[in-house]
View 1 (cartoon, rainbow, N blue to C red):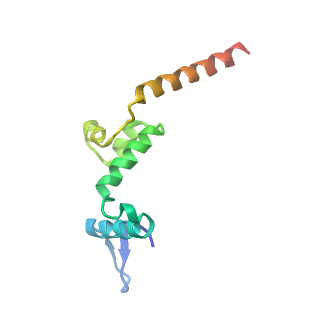
View 2 (cartoon, rainbow, N blue to C red):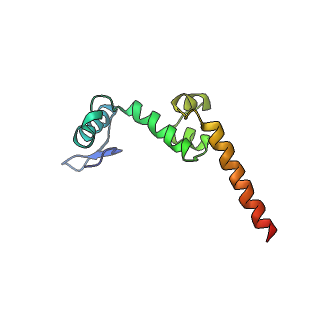
View 3 (cartoon, rainbow, N blue to C red):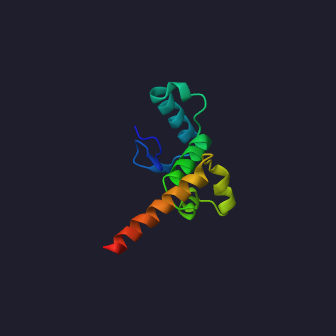
Length: 108
């Protein structure tokens, strides 16, 4: 069973858009079946926070996340992001490693 359908086909062959409530119910069923300890707290809103944070932590561009979520303002997207306390240090260390690797390639 698909979790996030964009349309539903009826037995008469007609097609209708899936509404918000259908998505909430499907998410609740999936959480109850696969993540029972999260069944009461996993909502579409919580899922947006989690996905936004994880995509950003994995290196996805903030503007791309904004477009993915359909936000008009980057500030709205940033409200959904939660970063670790060491985010700045981790980004700095990764940047230094990237620069060192590029410099090493120039020496050859």
